Image (cartoon, rainbow, N blue to C red; front, side, top):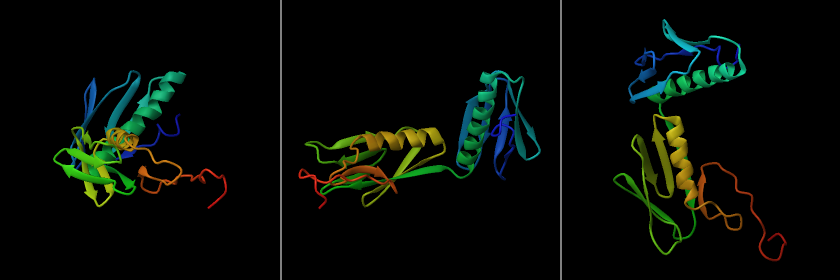
Length: 179
């Protein structure tokens, strides 16, 4: 058995799951998420737990077993608690403002950069800190990565957009000596 796949998923109060032949729907206080079912993988609800089992021990089916369990666990966490990523904007004159569903950023370019947030993802801006949150873990992570890619942190002065707590390895300047 897969070490990840054999673990049952606990359902918190307020979270319901609907298993159809083609899709699995998880609904909670934060929203609703759906996932297609994978072949040779069965999902059943036993009381307040979700159990994922597989039909055989072929390598591809074994891989899908753990993947399906991890996706369902992320869906349950997303609809009950939600996911968030924090980004930090560093640099002189670098600013971020939220205008509806758009992030307006001054990142040292000759123009203002506007990033439109996808459906299901919200952002909160406090000074130069951006908090991206939502119910879908993959979508929140992808949105945070796209925002970071607009101006990656550079190694000389550390200017740019980085994840909160990310360590940027700094380089010394032209002389090659430490300053």
